[in-house]
Amino acid sequence: MSMRLAIVSRIYRPEPSAASSFLGAVADEAVARGHRVTVLTVRPPRGLDEGAPVEDVRMAPVLRDRSGYVRGYLPYASFDVPLFFRLLFLRRPDVVFMEPPPTTGFVVRLVCALRRIPYVYDAADVWSDAAEQVTSSRLVIRVLRATERFAMRGARRIVTISQGVLDRIAALGVGRPAVVTGFGADTGAFLPPADAEAEAPTEPVFLYAGTYSHWHGADIAVDGFAAFSRSTPGYTLRFIGNGSERAFLEQRARELGVADSVEFVETMPSSELVPHLHRAVATIATQRPGTGYEYAFATKAYSSMAAGCPVIFAGPPNGPTGAYLDQANLEVRGGIVSGYAAESVAVAMAALAARPLSAAERRSVADWTAERHSMAAVAGRVVDVIESVGQTRDGR
Image (cartoon, rainbow, N blue to C red; front, top):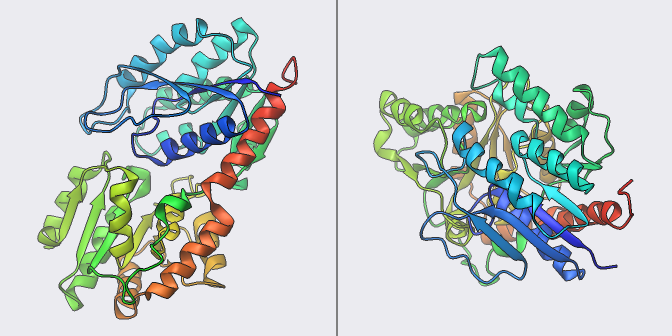
């Protein structure tokens, strides 16, 4: 039975991010099943082609931070306040699917309660836990945690990426039905070409692609690269993305004498990022230990391996990302779990620089990832949950 689905998010394609790709895949899957999809989102940054989406994408202006990202109190408010009225007067959907922050969830719960519309909450992580890494204000944390609980407790269903996040949600006292749907990559877009060169990679580059905030602890990538460069010069560490830690990372590179070999490139669409992944020796994913956030998964590992590029993971070895790489390495050369230490990262870089993956090995990594962690498969599981909510009269 066809239904009306509203997707609410402060970020959506063509703006490059894991959330954009995920939500776009959910919209594609829902449309393919015959549902009518309306997306309430924001205008993308200048220069990004909006394309011709099959879903009804309704964009509104929004404030952005200095890096061009919708992040922070005022940018969130510039989306959430108008959202109240946009969602209130939208033709009544059968179900709403929403993406955090929790302030957006607060608005969605209010409007959906007024209009008696069920909604599904996408809990890719726990925002109040992440906030503890960037603020020491207990008041801010308490307010954010209360807002997050309020938003999740109003949902008819919650979808999340891992059992770790699900356990953390339960520990916060949220008892709503939740489903682990996983999180994947757009494996079709990242797949290496079939006629790829026999020798790979073609550039002496280690790549960090994505956001670098405090809890990511991306400075360990700079420290490890500096140690690696002392014995193996001629390589580049390239950051593609944005984040609050850029000035700190640039300063760290200068202090360690590798500023000339560390590059910072602005966020780019997936279509432009893919060649960088195909040519790099490896990508680096980092996660600072001891933050109480060890249950989170470094989703950039999916995109990297979908492109056939191995991953160096510098973070808690007993977390979900390390377990994922260990599982992959039983069948393909997915990467190295280095631990969160500069010398360990340097050893991992040296190992992959000395014996980089061949084109055939890269293709095996990409095929393995596509088989198990495609975005399309994850989107299908999410739409199953949305349908289970939207196709019952009262959403229960």
